Amino acid sequence: MDWDSLWFNGHAATMGPAGAIRDAAVAVKDGRIVWVGSRVDLPKGRAVEEHDLGGRWVTPGLIDCHTHLVFGGNRAREFEMRLEGASYEEIAKAGGGIVSTVAATRAADEDGLVASAARRLERLLAEGVTVVEVKSGYGLDLPTERAMLRAARELGRRYGVTVRTTCLAAHAVPPEYAGRADDYISLVCDSILPVLTSEGLVDAVDAFCEWIAFSQEQTSRVFDAASRLGLPVKLHADQLSDGGGAALAARHGALSADHVEHTGEGGVRAMAEAGTVAVLLPGAFYTLRETKLPPVDLFRMHGVPMAVATDCNPGTSPAVSLLLMLNMACTLFRLTPQEALAGVTRNAAKALGMAETHGTLEAGKAADFAVWDIGDPAELCYWLGANPCVGLMRGGRPADLPSGTIIPT
Image (cartoon, rainbow, N blue to C red; front, side):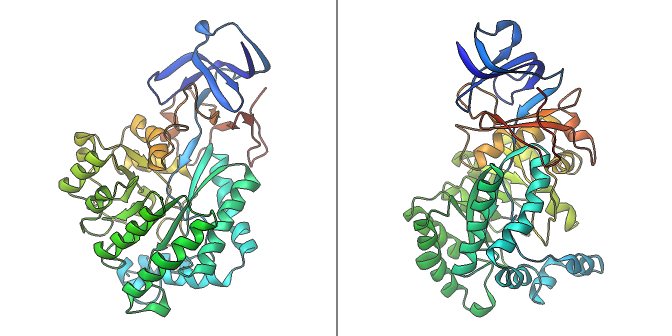
């Protein structure tokens, strides 16, 4: 048996059925894992390259399954306003929030969007991220939504990272459609989504179903349009109130319902029946100083997979560290380290419809994995501000980390 590369003398947190394997070996060929297990069971074979892990741990490449990575400007002033007592809703009604980022994003050119997002992406890649979802939703018109999604695609090409693009045109009502939300939803369904899909820029469709954004009926129109185009859907659901968003997402077979702090048991049951993933976003919870915890115990009880993501965005989660989100998921939401790690690997892959190819170290899956200088996988959730990632493998090839470090050979 011949392999392109063999990785040995380390430990593997497979995040799959094999669990954690001490003294593991991983064999790679043609960008795929072809064998993983205990080194003593390794089949006889020859590798073009052999990599001694030096006792380090290997995990699947991390997956950030909910980001708004591409945007113009920032909203540091709103951060100050919240600390002075203004609520999320008050800031939005005063013309801040999403609308202020829309103005900055419309004013930026595509090259500028790529350059600013690249700095944020590099932080994620340095922490072992190999797949990142990037949403639009700060354009709210066809030209700017297109520019955002094109920028996301360019980031994937430039950095060799897997980027999944999500059209979130139904993020907010743009200023020029004030008081005409239904008309704007018609624009999204009849123009923005079909055109951007025809240009190959859309992998999934998202919407913000909340009383300050779009109703269930308006959201359903967007999801029906996505279905006609053959696109999977996701939903910003029940972040500020239990508006039935999670149940709506489940009725449409959504890949995920995200935020879900206010989701009730009926919504959780619906998600379980539909196989919809709950994406937990502790960065937004922390930044907004929320107190309503997502129903983690209900998700456990009903078997709803829980993913964890940065929600990187300029207003409510200016987070560029997925490792920090692991700690927050444990300390704020009381996930176990094992649950949190599953949330940025196998469950995050499921939230993007990528479970067949990513999220675990298993034969047949993409050879995307990260190498960590740690004594136990729980340390990835334990340390605050530390980054023990010392190597990254993407598509079967060692990748340069933004720090300049590469996987030891």
